[in-house]
Length: 256
Image 1: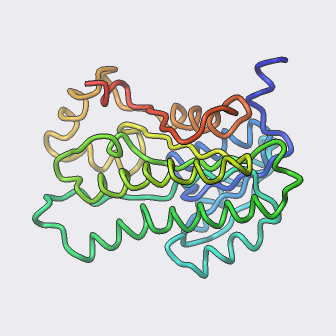
Image 2 (image 1 turned 90 degrees about the vertical axis):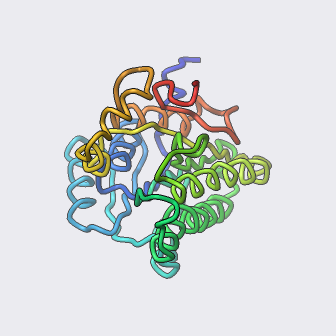
C-alpha cells in the first residue's frame, strides 16, 4: 500500500470549529488539501467566508457556517446542515490569563463554557452524526480535540485554562473507549504556544516572550501549520490505531 494515500481524506467530510483564524483556519486548509470537504464554523462571518473562498479558489471544497459553539441552539443548527460527518476538529477555545486568586466567576464561566462544555457538546453531536450512517463506519471516523500542553502540566496565571484542558484530555480518553466500538477514534492535539493572534497579544506583555522561549527546548514557538500537520495525521487513516491519546506538539516543553 502507498503510505502517502493513508494521509488522504478524499470522499470524507470534516467540520472545524473556531476556523476563522489561527490554528482552526490552518486545520481547515490542511484537511481540504488532503481531499476532504470541509465545513468551517466560527462566530465571525467574514473570516470564515474568506477562508472558505481561499480553499475553493485552490480547488478545494469548503462551506462557511456562522455558529456560536457555546449556544446549544446554534450547535444544533450547525449539525443539522451537515448531512454526513467523518471528522470533527474540536478547535474553538480561548484563555484569560490571570492570577488564581483574581479569577472572577464571569471569567471562570466564560472559559469553562467555551473550552470544555461546548467541546463536550460539539463532540457529542459529531459522534451522533457519525453513528447515523453505519455504512460509513467501515472506514472509520475521527474526533480531534484541540487541547494544549497545559492539559498535561500546570502554569502560573492559567488555572482555569489548565483545568479545562486537563478536563478535555480526560474526555478524550473516555470518549475513545466508548466510540472505538463504532470505529470512531478520538485523539487530542496538545500544542505549545503557537503563532496566533491571541499568542501574539500575549507576547507583547513584559517578560512573557522570554518566559516562553526559555521553557521550549526547541527554542521557538510553533507555527499553525505544524499543529495542522498533527491534526491531519490524527484525522487520517494513517492514524487508524491511534485513539485515546494526546499528540504533543510542544517543542519539548512537557519533556522536562
